[in-house]
Amino acid sequence: MKELVVYQSKGKQLKFVFLALVMVAASLLVFLTGIGNQDSRNIIFIAIGILGILFFGFCLLYIIKDFIVGKKILVVNEKGFYDYSSAIASKDFIGWERVQELGTYTIQGQVFITVFLFDGDEFIKSLPAMKRTAIKANIKLGAGHININTQAAKGISREEILHEMSIYFDEYLRKSSIVTEEISI
Image 1: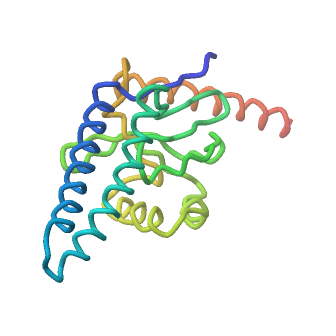
Image 2 (image 1 turned 180 degrees about the vertical axis):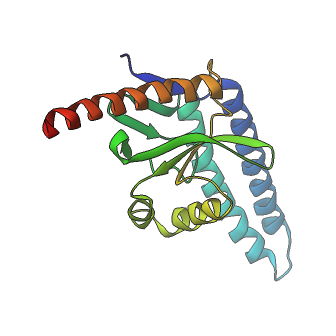
């Protein structure tokens, strides 16, 4: 089977470029306000402006790079998948042997492909604290350990992605049951 690579839509990326530009401009305005103001608070404005310009400027460069190169949000193959779809995505390889169940999960009108893992607790422990906290909150709301955001997928629907993932997962289960049967005979 051919590997499925899902890229982020250029339209969605363009929105992020615009938002980053707005934030850089706003930070520049705060910085200039600090320079032009002879008040004692000008140091705060200057510091906030510089931090904003640096942070949002870096974000802008990163987003432009992804826009030009193309950002992968999901890679699926016969061995498992990589999820790059969100800030809390682990970006690590997840083998099919770790997957317990695939499905969908809806929160605030946004639908995700959700993945429940056999070793979910171990998976969560391996993540940085911020990601761990966000994933634990999602689990309390009924989501799986991994939630794939397909809203920005280019040229393929969430349903098609879930269908393709299910085909790979079912094929893995079929092959692993054949191996298990051969071992037990």
